[in-house]
Image (tube, rainbow, N blue to C red; front, side, top):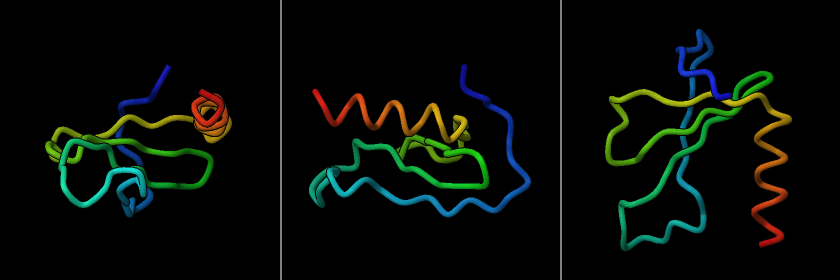
Length: 66
């Protein structure tokens, strides 16, 4: 289950290269030691969800096969 708490490590969010330049309907991802954080581009003030690095890698691996 994702961790919704805030990390003490500074997060540098980036948009997915799949987002394209014409839409703001996307998510942003930031990497930190041992985790990846995900947030909504339209509502960054709402915070982020933090996932352990292994879980994030598994999600990306599975999504790339679909």
